[in-house]
Length: 348
Image 1 (spheres, rainbow, N blue to C red):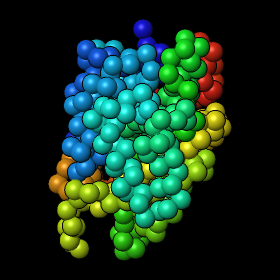
Image 2 (image 1 turned 180 degrees about the vertical axis):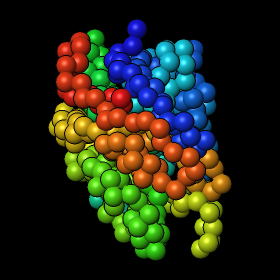
Image 3 (image 1 turned 30 degrees about the horizontal axis):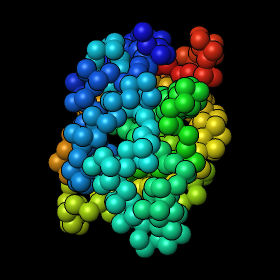
């Protein structure tokens, strides 16, 4: 049985490159029997060229060893691959796990030039910090490229509920802080100007458009990072250790990582802010598109495009052969069963 399920989309775009697809988003507990390969791919996607530093096979095993904490998003039942994954691991409890050891070492190394952030991490996950009662939760959050951001507030709300239930059962999920890793990309002024000029008007004003971070020209792949940063004590963008130098005219994006340290008691406020921010999509359609990210890598993604009619969809996907045969605005579901998680957007 799924945790939550969104209504069906009903139309298709008959196009060689772009098509409107019927999608049911269902929320499930992690499934150790099915999710391992897809989860490992998401770990590789999140950490990119640094992923092998964190022993992705063992990290996936560790995440799936606690199937009652966290959520996956799927479209065709529990036995299929997840499109999105969110969970939390106790870095103190698992401090001897090779993956957690590597994550701690990585965080301390990358923060070395940011003295306030480094000092905070030392006090929490340094040798002395790991002996304290101030436990840090490592939040793992990754999803298919262009997966609609509307699923994220629901996943975080379910995580908060599951952590509360685990604490009620005297399980070790009492956290003082959360450490969240994300990934970024950097654009030169020329690339940024090109992207803005090429973007259709409807997409330029999307409320979830990537927001420039504190470092000039750096943007996050995860739209929700904009809100996490508002509640974070410290935020840091950094280059991947294993990244190859990018030549001026090379294909793809220059990617990097980011870390955010957030007080655990700010999680309810964060969820409320994200829910509000991503609950205003009255007119959207889901488009299945072939996207290019990184050097010579192709990833299939779900794109959420604001549009009133098929002409706006054609404009948004822009420049491809063929035409959009049908499209209509998304529905807004106000009454969600099982207590509900506020307004939920579905493509229609």
